[in-house]
Image 1: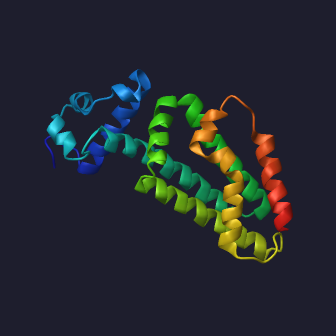
Image 2: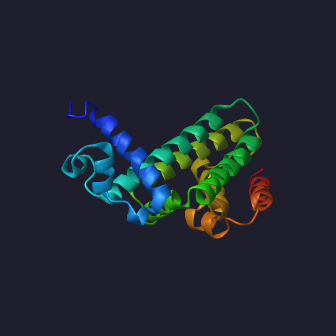
Length: 196
């Protein structure tokens, strides 16, 4: 146990919380590990043993948000309702969560966008989770004869590619002042119709 009385996991969680507050208050470019450590009441050397640099701390902030996003989408996948409606809702949820982040938490979104550009491991995990979720929804739709029987992974990839204009970090930010939900629904419905 460190002198703080906190476990390593608790120190990391607290550092992430403080980093989030500081990112919101002064912009993510101005956050320094030294300041986070000072607010925690530990040495910056102690914080460096948990995060090798500021980027690693920002990655932890983005990773936490993506895990929560993925958990919400996982819950949707397991709901007992029409799979076609779940596919549409899956895209709308993803679009809305990213749009909300870019509008309400622009500094945190910038850190996430940078991590996405660099295709960090936790970003790859999120993309893998998206494919697993969509494959599960497609399998359900095929089993219920809502989509013609085809290669599940291919259909999932087609749908994810069609929705990328509404879910890709850069494009969500670029179009954040437009209401694109009806276009998103029309796009996914058109693809689903072609697959049906």
